[in-house]
Length: 182
Image (cartoon, rainbow, N blue to C red; front, top):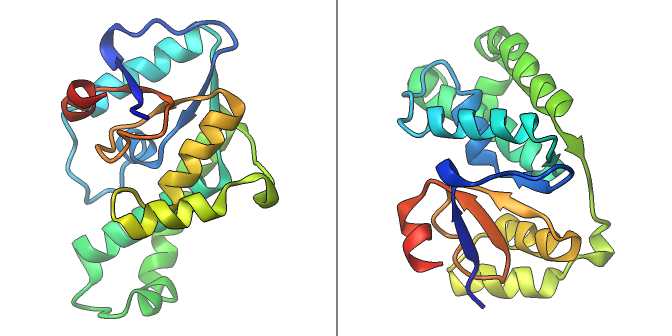
């Protein structure tokens, strides 16, 4: 079943509406220092402000935080340190990584403080479906879990990830591809 996509810039948030914020949105709002500024970061920043003003609830799944921390670190490694540390794990053990961590920690705490952290017990997730979706090549494993969580909890998903076209959930996005196909 296709997802329903709402245009980010015209979406009106409601009090107590629950929105799961995808990793890519946090990377636009709290970007690594070497990451280029994305044109849509301003749009998502306004949407987050509107969400807060409407007293909607930004939801954080622990998997999103894991993805954010890993993606942020890898972006910095690839952009600034890959030649010096050909192995990402060596970079994570380096003084250069540890110099980055105060900013990363500040960003992560900002995300946590802004959000309501939730979790669904793993025995409540449809792991078989997530595996089937993954091996089909259409959506990655974690994204499939996010669709399952949104369905179970009636969350909307704010994302810019163009892979979220199936699952029967509601999306809030500035991604034109999603707006066309959903």
